[in-house]
Amino acid sequence: MSESDKKLFETILTDEKLSAVKNALEKDHAITCLMLLYFGLGRWGPAKQFIKDHKGTISDGTFRARMMEFEQIGIATSVKLDPLKRYYVKTELGEKCAKLMLQSFNQITKAMEKVPA
Image (cartoon, rainbow, N blue to C red):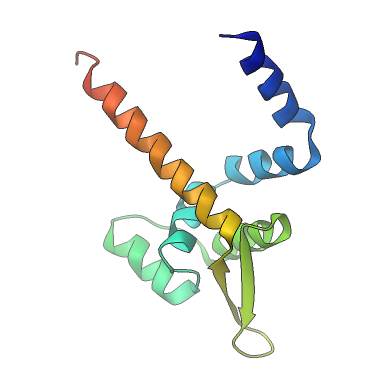
C-alpha cells in the first residue's frame, strides 16, 4: 500500500461526491442495478426478467431505490412513461462507472485464476 493509495481512500471517505458514489455502490443490489442500467435494462419489467433468467431475485422497491439514488448522484436519469411510472437510462458518468466496474471484475477474475484452488 502506498501513501497515495491511503490519501485516495481518505478522499473517497470525505469528498461529498465520491463518498456518495461509494455509499450508493455499497447498498443492496447496487452493482446489479448499475449493470442493468449499463445494458439498457432500466425499466422494472425487463430488469426483473433478466435477473430471473439468470436465477436471481431483486425486489421492485430495491430496484427503484437504487435507480433513484443513481439519479441523485448523476449515474442515471429518469424518463417518465406516465405520471407514476418511469424508466432509467445511464448517463455518461453511469457508463464510465459501469465500464470501470466490469474492468475491475475482469481483473479480479484474472487474479483468481492464478490462485491455487
